[in-house]
Image (tube, rainbow, N blue to C red; front, top):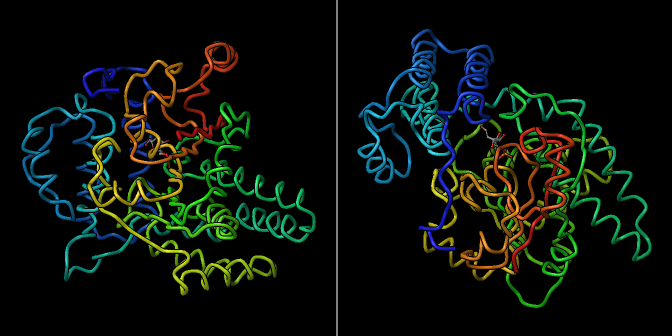
Length: 390
Ligand SMILES: O=P(O)(O)OC[C@@]1(O)O[C@H](CO)[C@@H](O)[C@@H]1O
């Protein structure tokens, strides 16, 4: 589909909309949490509160916040300076908001005390230490202990894929103001095609573009371990903190440590296999500046496009990757997935729990049922989808 045919961008101006609630209801709690969780001196707390006030009532200032991708942000801010936050596109505004948070807490300020510190680390660590993750790991241990027949193996692989899918509920940005109300439904399930691509011919890797640290990354790593039985894997991570719990390289290392220290032997063995795979370059790790930009996958940098083209499958995890894949726009949810993402350079699978207004590729009859039965299904995190283009 050509750029000119795309529907309008989702904004944050409409009263009562989900996107507006993210800025006007979620972000005040998010900033309060940052201030409560971290030992920030008053000037950093003041900056965070001023940023929040600016996003609620102010306009985009001319200063370019420090950090990577500077030329990109210089051009974007030159274009948007003076624009009221309320008139910005949702995805752009959120991406810029998180960069401004990192500026406010001195994340990119060399020689300052909080240089490089992750403002969301206390929340991420609490999830790594939490009871929910312990339960996940018990379930993993039980699942992997009874693997003898080929049917068991197929069931185990499918269980790991589903765990990685539902792991996306553990997103701490979403949980800032929303309690999870269970796992209701997989609205689209293209999982047979996912396994066919993973097990298919060719020497290219499966690329997994991670989303959240903690429980989601743990489930992703268990899935990656299963994929490694048939294909090399490349795990793509954020180069710096973003959208609260997005996984960085440091989060990966902390997760491997947590798995290695777990009392369950199968979990310790998982950590060992993953570490061996990293040492042996069968599991490659990559961070890329593209993953912290508000642009969509339509505008991939050439190096990532080449990697995606050479991969046997690209698995995009989570809601934000979905928004960037299909475009954060007012789609008719019945628009075929393949029509929307036909631009993608290779085979791609999107695994997300629905936590924002947009969806595509939903069967029209199913869509009517969903809209009638639970009007909040697009934003409640209780509905999931696994969609494939190949
Ligand atoms: O990418 P993720 O972690 O699945 O979700 C990102 C998210 O928390 O951010 C947006 C609101 O800030 C929503 O799209 C979604 O709820």
